[in-house]
Length: 340
Image (tube, helix red, strand yellow):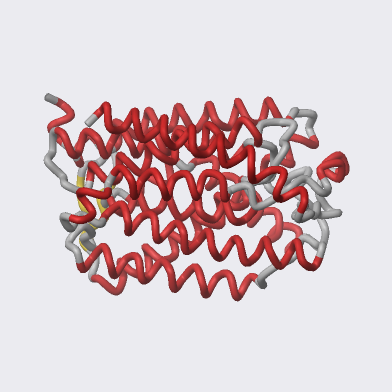
């Protein structure tokens, strides 16, 4: 199995890197450049026109790798990896529509917030129903570190799950505001879910572990290749196409392993970015113009304080890596064989 995962990561990397060589000049020819918000840091205006929708690199690479490597098991009826893939792809399509609208209008506004919310909510509910129907998902919430389950009825669970999914996806989207940041933060998250899925398959005999691990490995490799183009100074941005796909992928893996609450820890940077945005808006309105942060979301606050984009990348990715290591101990009781 380990050889299969290494191959998935390597193939995902190679395919994504090759796709980037063709995608970057193609997006330049199509003039699919990013429009920069005027209310953001002034030095970001120099990024105006940088090709966007680069997330297509790792999306296509992950899709091909997962389907190719899992083809035999898919034909035998194990469609877990397809569920995660399709779920993430649906969010990627929503992001692509949003990106396309922005490029066409030459401004940083695409779909309305209401349109995106309804589309994301529908995708989340459908995914939950699919996982429930194939017997992967239960309405019981595993509480990390405590080793207990909170039993909910299905309606309550679906409301909770849908809100978590939509919230997580948009939090990942908000994190994508500095060169390489969303990519770097998501890499250890992929590694975490890949490791947990592998152990759950090998030692706890959970059949969904293998396809989740393969998906995580393929995405991990594809993201490393994308980072070659996306690290500061970025030659290409992932756009909403890529960030919404990543949000869907992270949620898909968490729910397929039935450990959604661990998202709060492994996704600590996503949570902090989203909360900083919410807190800033609420406080600004409540105090009629006062601010808590120099600028929201959180990465802009540190930028305004003198942090470079490289420092943001390494610090935020490092924090995520530490939290992912801690998260291992949070799910030990979910897979008690880990202790043996």
